[in-house]
Image (cartoon, rainbow, N blue to C red; front, side, top):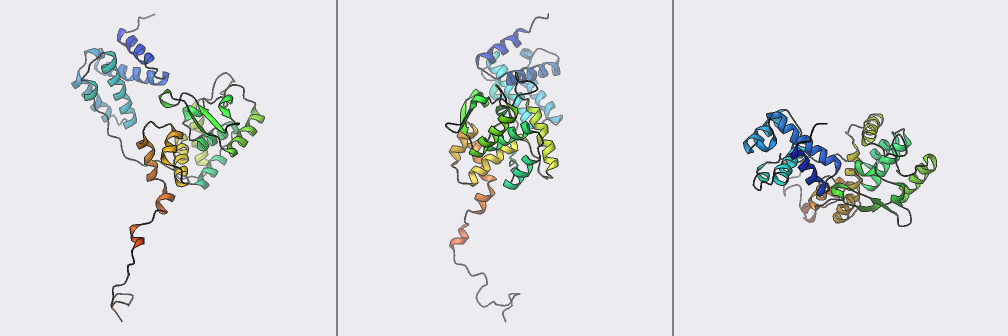
Amino acid sequence: MAEINPFRRRMIEDMTVRNLSPATQQSYLNAVAKLSRYFGRSPDRLDLEDIRAFQVHLVATGMSWPALNQIVCALRFFYGVTLGHDTVPERIAYARKPRKLPVVLSADEVVRFLEAIPSLKSRTALTTVYAAGLRVSEVVLLKVVDIDSQRMLIRVEHGKGGKDRYVMLSPQLLRILRTYWRLTRPKRWLFPGRDDERPLVPNVLHAACRSACAAAGLSKSVTVHTLRHTFATHLLENGADVRIIQVLLGHASLASTARYTQVATKTISNTPSPLDRLRLEVVPPGLSGPDGSGS
C-alpha cells in the first residue's frame, strides 16, 4: 500500500480536529489534489501567482461560483491551517456571488408538486422538507426518535456546521408521518435506503423532484432546496418574525435569512406605498377630456 502524502495526512488531521464533515473533508482534499495535478507539483511548492493562475483556469472552464468558492475554502484551509502561512489565505480571492433570487412556489404549486410524487417514501420526505424547512442532508438523516409528538418538535442533528436544532412539527405533517409509519414501519431511520441499516441517499430525492416537476407541469425548476426556500418565504408572508425563521433554518447569519424578504411577494404587495398617504388629483385642473385637451 502506497504511503500517504505527509501534507495530505496532516490536512486530514487538521480537518478531523476541527470536526469538519466527511463530505467537506473529501471536497477539500479533492480541491488540493486538483491544484497539484494542474501544475504537476506538490501544493506546498506553489505560490500565490500559481494559485491565481489556477483560479483563472477554473473560471475559463465555466465552473460555477459555488464550486469555485468551495475550492477557495479548501485552499485557504490548506495554506492557512495545514501549512501555517498567515498571509496567504486572505489573498486567495473568492468568486463574487451572483445576486439571484431563489425560486419559490405558490401554495397551489406546492400541492401540485407533492401530489405528483408517486413514491410514498419520497413524497413524505419532501413533504417534511417543506413543512419544516430542512436541507436534503438533514431530512435523509432523520431518525424515528427525532419526531417528538409530545412537544410537537423535530430534532435535527448535525445540521450545517455540525449544529443541532429543533424545528416545528406540523400537526398535518404528524398525521402524514403516522400514516407513513403504519404503512412502512421504519425502524431506526425515518426514511431508510434500500435496507433498514442505512438512510436514504439524497440523489433519490433529487431524482424525485425532477420527475415530479415534469409530471406536475411546472414551468419552474424545482429542487429539494426550492421547498426549503418556499418554506421560509411562506412563513415570512404569513407574518413570522425573520429572526424566528433564521433559527428554524439554522442560518448562522441573519443576512442569509433576510434575502427572503425580496421574494415574499405577498408581503411586498401588502406593503402600502407612500403614494397611498397622499391626496393627489390625477387630472390637472382645467383638463377634463380623455386626451387632456379640456372640453
